[in-house]
Image (cartoon, rainbow, N blue to C red; front, side, top):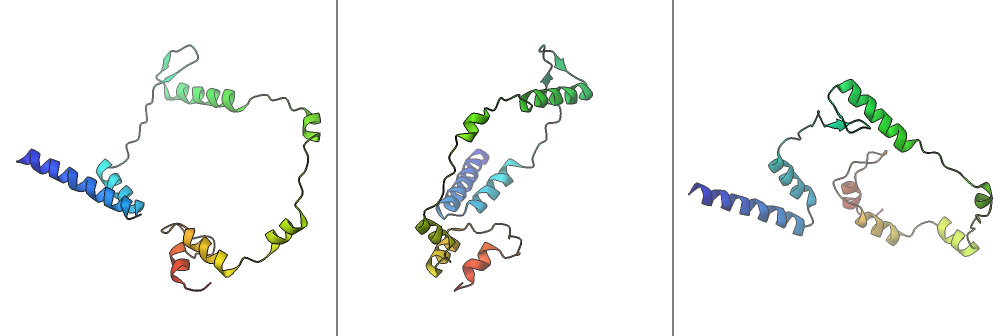
Length: 139
């Protein structure tokens, strides 16, 4: 009886996740998944090898090795040929394209842009959320 109820429970949970996704509500789907997964588990002692393949056990040595790794990975010498850079053509806009880009957007363009924005996101620097813009009526 218990096993059957467990199977039913997992089927219900999966159905809830699928319904949320079909209803275009990924936030609910991911909150269910996060709840099922439980708290995040930090892995603090990831095995790290030195350049010779020997595992490091001391945290100081591990930190030093990570520093070496990123230094080798990110500090790469590159040769830049200035002649190639000088040959790059700077593109200019046509007059009509420049006028189009500098023109004020139409009300319809603003409506379409607001409707395409994702709901439930953090507000911008003006503290106005997308949900408020969508519920606000005419811009």
